Image (cartoon, rainbow, N blue to C red; front, side, top):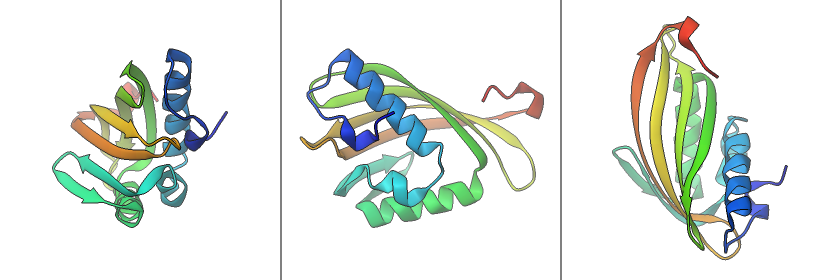
Length: 137
């Protein structure tokens, strides 16, 4: 499977689906350094109510995220695409340090530069408590 940066715009349905799958695979490694390399050095992020920019901030955000969201497992699905933009819906499951499981539902809008790096990410999500037996991922 290609890395997220191997797939460049303009996107076709096939390349957009491959880009989404590559992103899902990368995020499921829970490796902040690896994931951050898919973004431009000045990438703009909105993640829920947080706004920040740049690879260093992205890496720090992901490090903190995966310290809190244990056993994280993600599923992304292509929703729509244009030449250099992709929208996805996603779900992921995780547990907190007390053992409570959650399923997070949301959507993301991505914009890419010509080299295939994401220069903008806009994310909205909601967390729902679930029982361990109700996990899907």
